[in-house]
Amino acid sequence: MSDGVLMIYKLIGVMGLLLFLATCRSAETPENNISEPDNVAEVLPASTTAVQVPELNQPTREPPPIPSPPPTSAAKQTASLEEISFAADDARIRYDGRFDFQDPLAPSFDWSGSDIEFIFSGTSLTIFLEDGRNSYNVVVDGQSQVIETEQGVENYLVAEDLQAGDHLFRIVKRTEAYVGATIFKGVQITGGQLQQPPTGAARRIEFIGDSITTGYGNEGQSPDCWFTPQTQNADLSYAAMTAEELDAEHTLVALSGLGVVRNLRQDTAVSAQTAI
Image 1: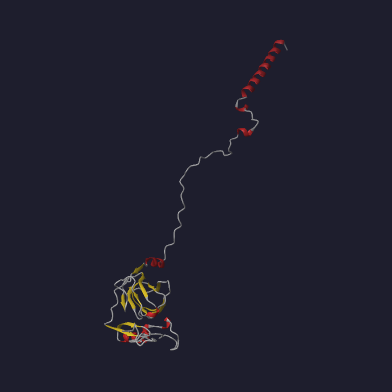
Image 2: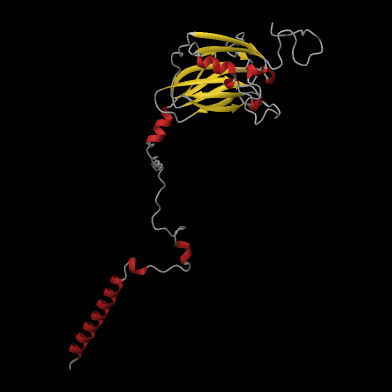
């Protein structure tokens, strides 16, 4: 091979090497030439959360209330029954006997057999008495019961669970004046009203007497038993039974031991306070 040809081959080899080196340098871009930092923690974000979602002040809703069960028919009926009070001076209340009306809202009485009557509608009845020792017959629609008052108590439930319609009420003082006086302060009616007062009897009788007229001990077990207010019942005295037989109203002015001229167990021939 001639020297000229050998020189051409050498030049071609040198040019190929230069072309290869140029191609390698052009392939080294900035993206591929990033060096990894020595401390990875320095370039990490403070939070590991990829996306921070800002807090929004959105309106909150309270859970709906739990609905109450519908009222039963009994509850509706109870709610509709109003309690109404009536004062002692109500014209529909009828008094029979001797009463002290100096205070019309609180009339007082002490004679045995004194009674109060009225007609009412409603389901229950409470009466107000200021007393502490006396006993009373309470009659509602012909059904009788006995109540005994207590010191410091003024309201007495005397009728409840009554049927619809009008009801006749009557209270009678069983015990006599020695036991104590009573103050009547009105009534309370549930689900009703006072009605027009009952019509009085055509006849009226006043009885003046002593223990036999007041019914002293007439409910005792024997003639020898000791007297207590619970054994006295003015409604069973001869005076009350006579008036009932004659269809008459009656008033008792009677006290045990009361005499016309001299009272029982008095030393003097004439007593200062007698029936006359």
